[in-house]
Amino acid sequence: MRIQGLQKLTLLDYPGKTACTVFLSGCNFRCPFCHNTPLLTADAADGMAEEELLAFLKKRRGLLDGVAITGGEPLLRPELPALLEKIKELGYAVKLDTNGAFPDRLEQIVRAGLADYVAMDVKNSPARYAQTVGAAEFDLAPIDKSVSFLLRGTVDYEFRTTAVAEFHDDASFLSLADWLAGARRYFIQCFEPRQTVLQADLHAPSPAQLHHWAELVRPNISNVSLRGI
Ligand code: SF4
Image (cartoon, rainbow, N blue to C red; front, side, top):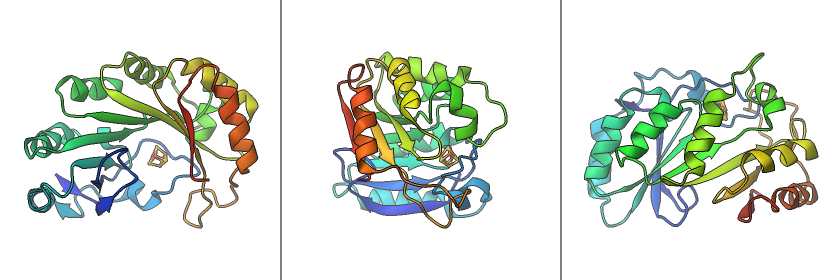
């Protein structure tokens, strides 16, 4: 398996851990606000060899304690469980980022003990999901299955929503509060405008707006935090 990017140190990507971040290419969504656009279409055959990553991780044992796996959508890769097994054999905790579109693969990885923490994007209310992932139509069932699986608490997890002024409003967060009720952790992340996102004319909500949305969610999810403000 090849790796399309490695950030050798992050204190942010894996809560509570000193970690590195591994980027895997390919995604089944086209979120207009995506920050990782080069990864969406990058060839999975390009990039760093898996052996190089594992050699790096062997050397960093004792200095790093976690590996954050992100994308793109990492669960698109059939070879992912084999890579995670090797990372776990080296003694690292694994955090997996996912858009929730592959609930069966997610559950298999968790049940095999190959992920210690899952961060799932829940992009918007069901009514605005298609628009928010850049699709004309959207089947929400796989996303809902991933949400239900994580809510059962088999693995430690967070849900998170990147809030974009053009896509989110009060109704979005009231609906998300119902959908994710009882979640262990929920983060509302502020969109950061960049030239490289798929749709150039998007805006960040104001800090006051984000605080207001967090308050709308709190009756159903006690542990709500804001990121990026
Ligand atoms: S799911 Fe993530 S990686 Fe895929 S397009 Fe959306 S923001 Fe980008």
